[in-house]
Length: 93
Image 1 (cartoon, rainbow, N blue to C red):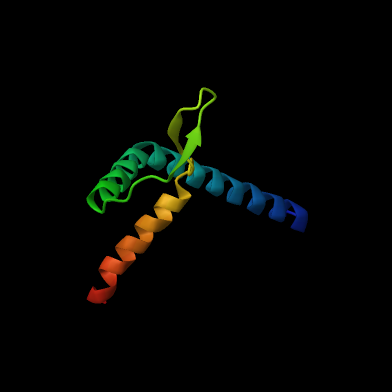
Image 2: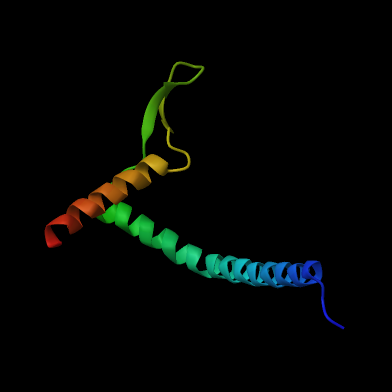
């Protein structure tokens, strides 16, 4: 018996969903193992290029001044790292 157009499309959608699910699983597994290495690499580059985290001064309730992180997701620091690496690579290209 021949499949209808709707059945063919449903089969294609199911196959694509299975492929996407398998791909997502592979990415998740890779992130679990590679994520640590990537994080370590970024930390080493921060240290090597002397890129410090963003902090701001804040006064506590009892009047003491303290440093607190102002870039909790490290997007500013990461952008500074990228700029530093790009500046190092630029003369080579």
